[in-house]
Image (cartoon, rainbow, N blue to C red; front, side, top):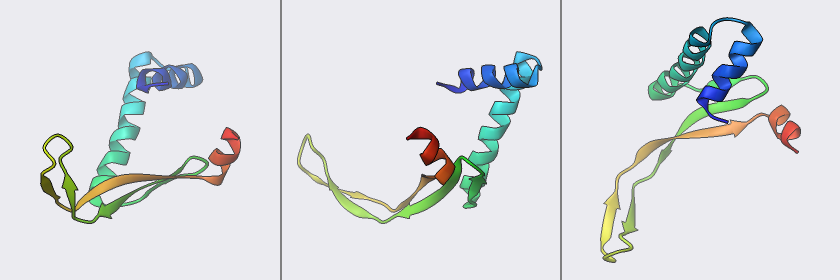
Length: 90
C-alpha cells in the first residue's frame, strides 16, 4: 500500500473528491514530518508514536576501499507501534 492507495481509502470513506482526499493525506504526512523536525513526538491512538532519536557519532568502514570514515551524530526518525496495532497484525 502506498500514499495513493491511502488517498483512495480516504476518498471512499469521506466521499469527497479524490483531490481533497490526496490533500488530506498529504497534510497529515506534512504535519508529522514538521513535528519531527522540531523534535516533537507524534502520537496517533491505535497506531503508534513517531519520534526522533539522536544517533551517536561513530567510525564506519568503507566496504569498497576499507578506509575508515567518520560518521557524525544525527537525528533519525523512530516509530513505536501501539499495542492495538501489534495485536491487529498478529
